[in-house]
Length: 151
Image (cartoon, rainbow, N blue to C red; front, side, top):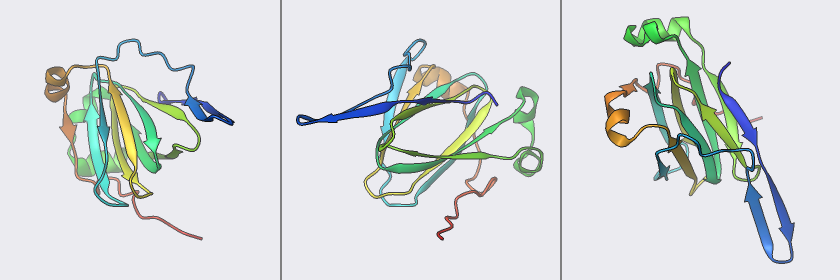
């Protein structure tokens, strides 16, 4: 497993709440963008890069994030073969417990907001042109991890 989960924390006093991830370094980050889905349980998946790395921070709400780390030579496989060869890992990340998820190169990722009005920020190691040139997209159901089970 090459992905990393960098835990943060929060501090509350009479002035309000301070959330932080002090062990996250912005080295090699060249841009960032925020995503707000228009409705709860909306899926954006699957998106992969051979060279670009991303760091994910949930600003508001709770998100289910899927990641699939693959070998570089397998980016040319068709989606059916990819889904047979690799299995996704899932994480639930919430703004209530600040953290950064590092998505390394050679990884497909996707996410779904589990709460209304969620905001998620992606920090990227490639500028937009290089990101577009390194962009691999698959349908959301290649690894269909999006159904929620409630107990």
